[in-house]
Length: 478
Image (cartoon, rainbow, N blue to C red; front, side):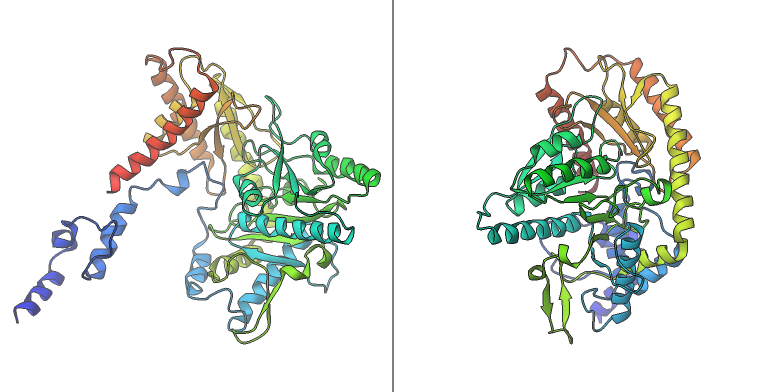
């Protein structure tokens, strides 16, 4: 009877008066006993309050807001396993519709009733891995047919590529040949890229929307130069376009820009649905020009879920919610809606850019044509650095990344603000005001810099800056 009374009292007491909020939160071992659901919820909810505000996280390209109607669809599908195609045929059909719509948007040479070649992924990282594997396998097949060795493949990129390209190269044993950057030019030079191409190059990867500055690389010029080299050598080196950020921008703002399947050497394109595809994190896409560009021996066929199902992914089980959300956005917004949203992002980017320029303290490194972001560096870093600015902006809730450029421009340190759908004109004005306040306060402080820093010291400052942010968060929740 006593045990029953104690159990009843536990439910009568408020959550914050219970013993569960007085005990340390388990960190390394699963707790021995259960706790009430409201207590478990409150403990976790309270820890999560110390996370940054996603809406103010201007480091990320990833979508942080969707309409409530789409949220409902996603929650309704949260228990559907995407891979169970036979059990959830409509979800599979929605994925296929998305692939066809994206292929059409990128001018893939498919007929009206023809099915495009592509697949949904958990993001552009998986999409790039799949595209890279297809290039490697096609190159291997070609080399074997010619009686040549297949043990030294390479891929040519700019030094500004996202880390997933380095992962692909390391995980799948492909040499990464990088075109170095230089101050004032922070994207891959197509002429230098083509110079690096040899008979072992499986593809050249161009970026439509550099992570560093948002710029679009010149895919058309790359296609022209590479076509000429292929004619001279017979290598047939193709192009992949990493359109993770720019794939849902260029078709709406720059329809005449030739970067996609209109260029003959472009054989595959990846794009992130969870960036300017306007879906929450967890969805990417890769599409191929035609079936010949995806080798059959990379496609698996399984039947233990009820029917024959072709699959080409690095993952297997995953949720269906993001696929459904992507189709919702295509259906809900259409071409007109996406165009309006991206135009609005560009307008708010210009407001922020103008405000930053008006301080007179920064150089703007990003361009007007590209991904809606503002990348900027201090004109004078002799007393204070962009890392100090980023750290001081955190107290207002803003998360702006500070980083150094890749080789050979690593002496340039930059702040970057990514403009997403939910970043308004008002927030742009407020951010400028906070930057001005931080600059004024820093002007009254002694310099942290006693001497001109070496490249190593600059890299160490970058490391300490991010480590402080991580340690601060850990100290708050443990």
